[in-house]
Length: 307
Length: 307
Image (cartoon, rainbow over all chains, first blue to last red; front, side):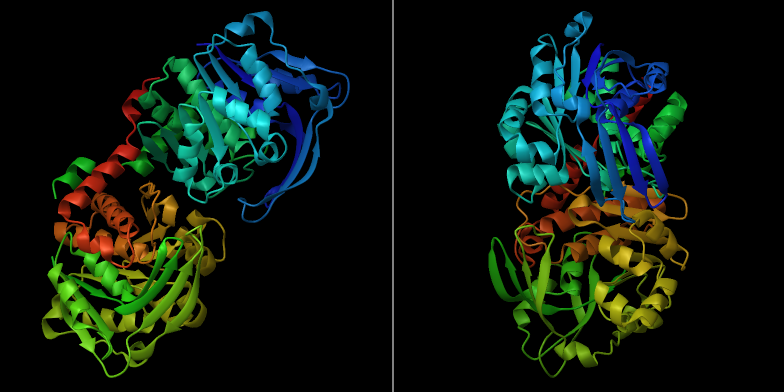
């Protein structure tokens, strides 16, 4: 079913122990829509500047992303420059230039308003709310966030937490938002604000999903060669909601399968700089990664119960 | 089948955000043997001083631990005093008094030499090697370690890494030992030293097990009320090798089930100070925890493969 994604479409300059790339395709919307495109045809909403090359938009289109909602505005594109340490869990942001994002006011193309699945990727929560207002028919909405918005846009973020069906955030953000080191406590507190599910991304340690009824926990796919973790969280989110939209299923068991689908696209994302691997991996590569996740988590509980 | 455990039997003083206990039963051998006793009758080897109360040894005996190998020596018992922060992943060691451990030379009771399963819990690697020498008939030996021995007893530790079948260590120790932030790289390097499996404990993030052929990854059981994480790693190890000894099975699928068994006993261990929960939890509580781990990890991969 129809999936709308709003997020950033940007230039990234990234340094990791494995190399450096400059002004390559980046942004939460780019990563999320490329990952979602393995399972459905996502509609991407965002803004780029006059400096943004058409070939990046063509790349997204060639992978099945509908870019009709990507507006081109006067000025320069959003730019991010980050550097990862030898321990790729540690990164430093060197430059963030909002540029065209500063005045962006998302207006959905007419036929986007009927989108049944909506992913509000990491972007100013005020913009996330503007999209929620324009998609009243959505059956499943999911919002990502980041520490910046917890610091400077807390009110709008709290409104997002009340209104979105699923809240996605990483472990340090969950701890910061809820003022507790315990992730289970943090998830419970966020659930009390209104969403029906909270998903906590833990990077190399996997993902936990909390609903009123259950907890689901999946390890990450073990990767020795993490070339560039940029966008892995967005690729997780895109694979997750893309799977749900493709299956048109919002049940809790489907959401568990969607966590696997997202884990597969996130792990592929880390294997190359920028969107390199999401661009080259075909459906077979994703299926193989899902089979790999099945292998590394397989255990015979029935046999265990017999002892 | 027969399981021998060598480790510390000690007094612990522990402070956590939930309270403080003084000179309670602690030590790697105590925790590991109590956890193993859910699955088999472990033989415990260690040393205590003249100050060690008989009731602690009786407690171990009452839970099915054979304490014939716990020697009583002149002097004071091993003592550890630690404090956990609000984030219980962070702890500070305030006092470590080796006392009777300084001159301990483990000599196994005659009939212990035929032990088929051997767990060398966290203790000086020179003592671990002394036990390996006395158990030539062991079919499965597993060694734990800690950062202290990496720092001050590297040669003996390297000998343990070459001679034990399974090496158990936590994530920070694996990174320190191998000089890499990547746990998969670290595990591969340790495997190259000789053991047939490496198990990396990641605390709240679960456990990864590496063999030549496969990786197995299991999340931790989500606990909101971690009262005292002391001994959780030892309780994991005891549950793990206790399960294998009880089932008399050293195959890789059995080791996966053993990781679940150890995760169950480790999570119970955290729910009370000292060995409180390992003392009170019956077989039904362990089975219920294993069922809980099945619930939080359950996902329908077959259904996922059909999309």
